[in-house]
Image (tube, rainbow, N blue to C red):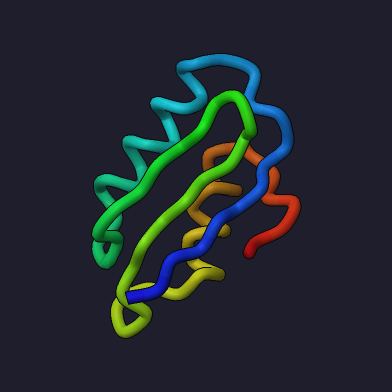
Length: 71
């Protein structure tokens, strides 16, 4: 299991958080996730055999959010 934190551009509203959380919960391979509104960060624990970090970033981008970096 791998855990990564993604810094996003500023999240402007709680519905943005809900949109990202919903996508993460439906994504196969993610076992745990958290979206923090006040810091605009997403933390996800995932199985690299099923899902790559690049795919998570793409899924976030597909929702209209910009990933600035990952840790």
